[in-house]
Image 1: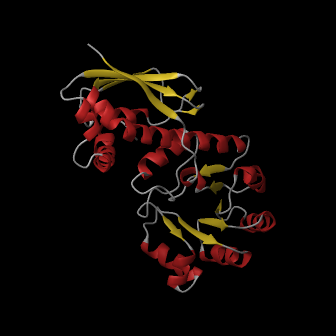
Image 2: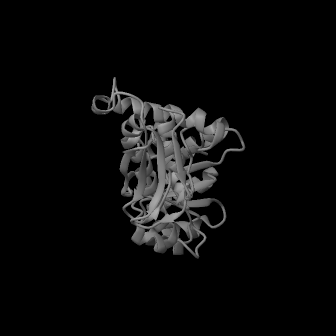
Image 3: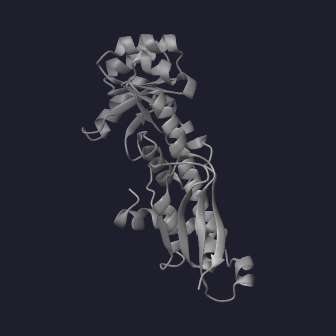
Length: 285
């Protein structure tokens, strides 16, 4: 997802936008103290244990300012790192290292935080048949990176964007004039290879979704007792997804109810960053 041609087409434009946000005309501090090209190096040090994610993005951030920048590491995305460990060494024009440092770390810290948080939730579902999904509750212009981080952490991606799948939510139902009508129109419009998912809030809506022929029924903000009844009603007539009020503490209970999927917006909107620093920067001969 973040390698080769795909990286250059889909990733570079976002990283460049982030760099432009941080450098509108010049890095005045760096230009004041570094008047000419000078090679340098700095250590990438983990200050918090967790799952590292975004190493290629970290490297690419420097390379977009200078293709000769080189990042050396023995780690790969998905590896567990301990606090205090040296993750790698970045080398290049020291002006580039100074100017791109914050943007590169922002990506790495954010992605590693999401991967680590996702991993902690996935562990709660070990031994069950329930799959953990992310949502579209992502940071603007960070979806590609954040959804990749969820996968690195062991989670799975729900639809990437609005073009990626049919998901009829409460406002769609209101706009269409009813659940059954919304499902019928979706099935008529969407290619037959696409599944139609519909969000329901109570058992009456579950029954209506089944009668309408929904392929996936999202049980939204249901308490455990109602969810159990819904799953029993649905049986093998459709796949089930639990969404809303999903916390780490509830995951095992939800899985025991027997839903196929559980989606959690918290994976991307509430994961804390992982503390990683660039230290010991110095010129090299």
